[in-house]
Image (cartoon, rainbow, N blue to C red; front, side, top):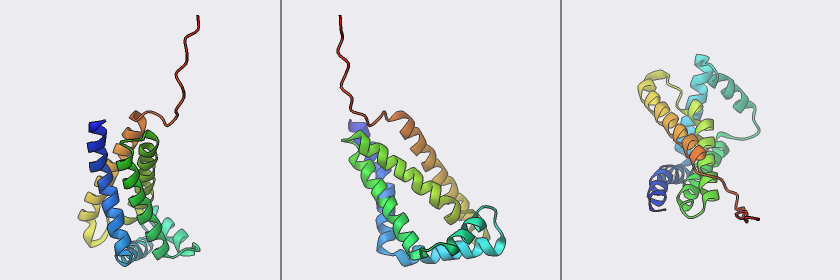
Length: 153
């Protein structure tokens, strides 16, 4: 339990702190998302330009997308931390973190332009966090609380 608590605090803190910071200053995220989407469309980047085109037609604003993604990120971190005491919370938090990483990474950290090297580093970091989420989901047991079967003679 102690190692799950310490590991959960460190792993969850990454998502909780980043999500809270983005919620405190959503305009920075909006500017970054707008720039990433514009660059993707201008440079016809594979996959990312398709996502940019879909998002430009979506009935939500980039501000709403940033708020939703930031809230998901912060919630994932909080659930991972609280998951030291409840495996269902832990698994839900890890799944939420994986979903966040899967949705955000290809768009926000596609390595191109003048910041290509930094974006490559961020892409690799997020890929490793996503891999950690998959490993944690695979090895964290289940949420079910079934009673142990009684032996019958």
